[in-house]
Image (cartoon, rainbow, N blue to C red):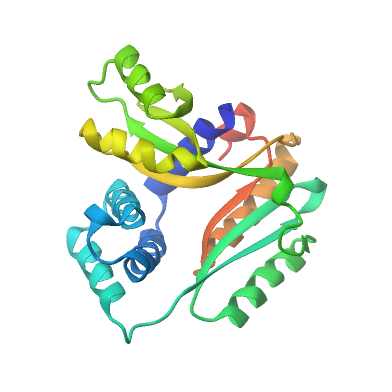
Length: 246
C-alpha cells in the first residue's frame, strides 16, 4: 500500500505550497456544512463533522472560519449542496474517480465533462469503475513524541490494516467499516490526526514514463481546481522519479 503514504506526502507538499489556499478552505467549508445538515452541529455526536473539523485544523483553517461554516450548516435557508460522483478514463487507460459537492448539478457535470474532453478523456457511467477502487479509511498522524512500537499496537487494536512510516508521519489505513472505530481509538489516545478521510484506493496501479505521468497529473490538477470538485482518485503509479518533478 505504498501509494497511500506517497499520495499523502504529495497532498502535504501541494497544500504547503498552494497559493490557492482559499480554494482548499472552501472545499472544507462544504464538508462542514453538509456534515452539520446531516448530523447536527455537535461534533461529539456527529462523526462526519468531527472528521471535517480535524481536516480543517490540519490545513490551519482559522477557528472563526470553522465556526462560520458550522453556522452556515445550521441555517435552514442556506444553500443546499448535493454530493455527486463521476468516473472516467484519461489517456493511457488511467482511471479517475471524482467526488463533487455542488449547489448546481448542471454546472458541475458540464465542467467535469469539459475537462475530460479537453484532455482526450472519456466520462463514463456511474458504477463503471467501482470494481477498480476500494474505499478505505486513511489517517495521517504526526509522529511527534509517539513511541512507534506502542503506537502501532494501539492502531492494530483500533482496526489498522496497514501502517506506513515516513520521517514525520504515520499513515494508517483501515477498512471502511473500521473508520469510526479508528476515530474513537485516536480520541481515546488524545491524538489528533493531520488528516482523516475515506479514500478510494485502486486495487492495481498503472505506471507510465515520467513525461506522460506528469501530463496525467496536470489533468488531475485541472479537476481539483474546479470549485465543485472535492476529491479526485486515480490509479496512476506515483514513482519516485515523478515525485521529484512535482
